[in-house]
Image 1 (tube, one colour):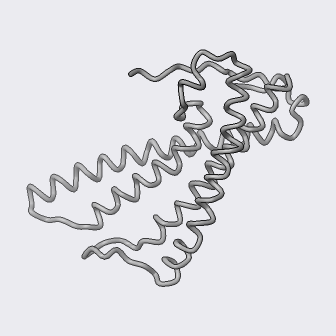
Image 2: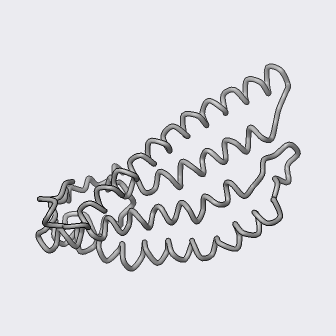
Image 3: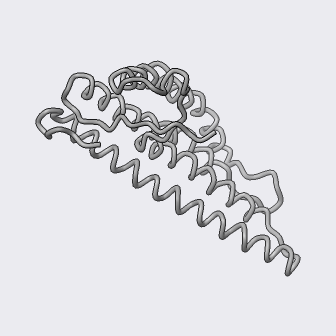
Length: 187
């Protein structure tokens, strides 16, 4: 997915390029978090069953890594065009119709949802930060770092959403060359 020429999209082309690159970098971080979570899980299981030593902090660390995976991986999946779609509406349509469906879905569903989640989670995160919330489990971790991932994650997803909206507008106006190929998931 590349712009036809940088001047065609102007500053929007540079914005798209920066956001896309950033989202892909977040995707790499998400992938590493999966690998680290698997390692933590394996080590935790070995230590727990072989040495009869356990810690809730290790279990919660896996949960935190999973949260990073989800919140950092979502913008990368959106950028890679690997997000969930309703195939009845999308499959078999022309590239131009797909771009319109994407554009409307991004504007009327993704963006309002991201903004709502950011607004709803603000007090949740603020309260956790103010009371220095800790896990209710013995030996657990502090909670605000994982909770702050909620507004950050939806903010990152919204940022990639803006990039995708600009791509669809550019494509529909003939100023951006976009890969519109969509492969229906296997059933």
